[in-house]
Length: 42
Image (cartoon, rainbow, N blue to C red; front, side, top):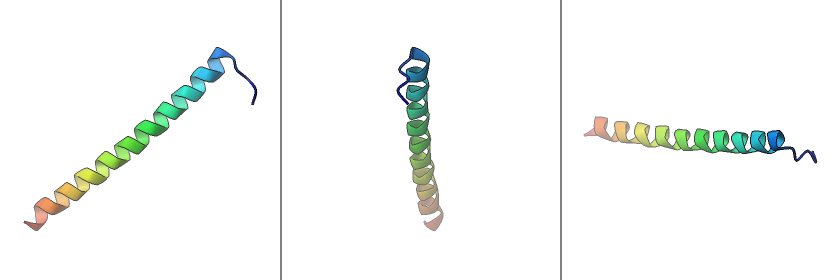
């Protein structure tokens, strides 16, 4: 795990970014679904 080559560091940064993006997308979908549900009730 002590590999600090630029390639390794860049890979880790990319994985973190991808994970954060996925979480953000999930939140956006949940909000959109909630709003759609509220519109149907009215």
